[in-house]
Image (cartoon, rainbow, N blue to C red; front, side, top):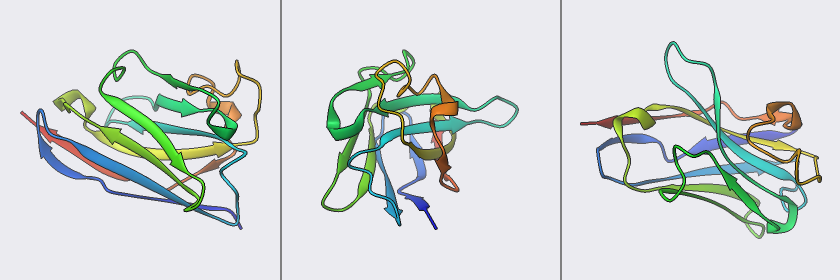
Length: 128
């Protein structure tokens, strides 16, 4: 059974940094389309970033571009999201997701249907 387990969330002040991790089991992320999503209370889930299979490209939402970096370590079968210069608007539950989509246009955080497997989420709270 595929499992994705996020960790690394917490509470920080604005301008601070956090690094989220997502450990996968029963699933090889090296060849997968991977993504990070977030959901704030009262808001719809939104895509944050995605990374193509075999690290062949990344995409970011405009709201996080230049501040967040998505990466993966295939030897650890883990996905990461480095978040710098955090803002109160970044407060949300962050989820990692995985899918088997190889097409560049569909391996995209804006296409949530491309992701078949989801983690349980980790809370990030940014105070002003």
